[in-house]
Length: 371
Image (tube, rainbow, N blue to C red; front, side, top):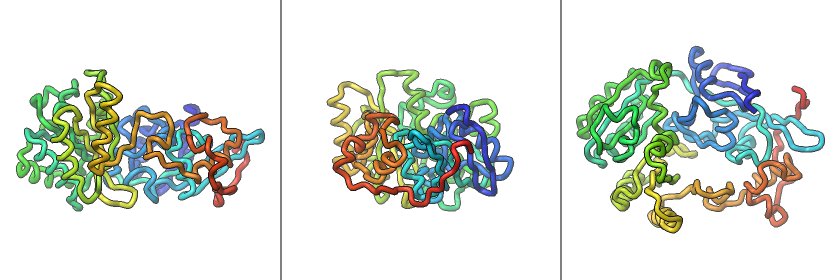
């Protein structure tokens, strides 16, 4: 799919691009026109648009716009069916989201149309703290300040920042860190919040300049945090968690104290699909046994923190085991022989037991396969 790497249309706040294009190329093309991606993974320099759509969640920018699946972020997709005579369909939102995060199980994505965000001149900051609660409270103050224009806020418990071998000479070992992207015009509020929470600034840089030298702090957040840690200690593993929007600060502090270093808090702040400010975790875990890893995940569940298990094969098992008949119906419509990513969608094996819509994409329009 990497040959399908062109921007098809760049409009006033929208972009349609082929699935193989790298997200950084969209960002580079859009920013001079006054727009940027609403959300992108930390791997944006290598990640493709189709990869984000098929297996991604959100990322940098989700503090404002929520995950990719939040209403309004995805406008449409173009998909090819897997049939003796393939069809090419343009599927508008919200039906387009039936093909999102399905890991290529129910259609071949050719193009994705996204809404964009107004561009800002971002300042990247890494602020450090001696106390985890101070770091948490500072991050939460930034998150919950509506007038502070931001693109990213991440909280990293010690020793996570110590794993950043290209940065860790800028702060003391054993410190907690908050990485943020703040609009240039809003940075003064951060400067006033920081001393109230006993923090200090370790790194400050203009995002545009940092990206030109491949030194952006965006590449130390989201899944990149795990990648940096694994370069230092390949015995680590990680979790994917979702906190309660009504009490995420208390839950974060409780879990950090409970595991006392066995599980290291990596927290990403965002809006959920309903627009609530909340937090998700990509916690690092000192791995010992499969049994202990399962115990750790159960402790989170017992404390009302959801687990999206990344250590499973099938789509549904990573999403609390829920089988979605509408997703299975799309696969039956677009891939009737079940050729795409066999075994990945558990609901496909159970399709005869499900009540499936025979026409799940009612708003799709058909195009010639040659267009």
